[in-house]
Each structure stands twice: as structure tokens, then as C-alpha cells.
Image: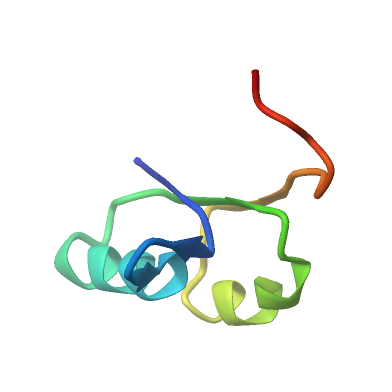
Length: 60
């Protein structure tokens, strides 16, 4: 199971997820992001879940 964000330092979580699925067809990819625009792209490689987080949420 891998939890990824769409925008990560140096790499796209979408591309990392696609690479992981090529290496292991049984891996579950969960995208957690505040960027809803990437939903279609994530669905193209059948992510397990695509969760939206609020853009104004501050982690403490």
C-alpha cells in the first residue's frame, strides 16, 4: 500500500504510483491531495482511492 500526494518534491505522485503498479500489480495506491484536477489521470491507472484534503487545512 502506498500513500502519495500529487505534488511531491521532484516527482509526481501520479507517475510514482503508475511505476509502482507496473512493478507490483497488487499494490494499492491511495492518492491524498488538495488538487482535484488530477482525478482523471489517477483513474487512468486505477488508483485504489483518491482522497481530497482541504486546501486551507494546516497540519499541527
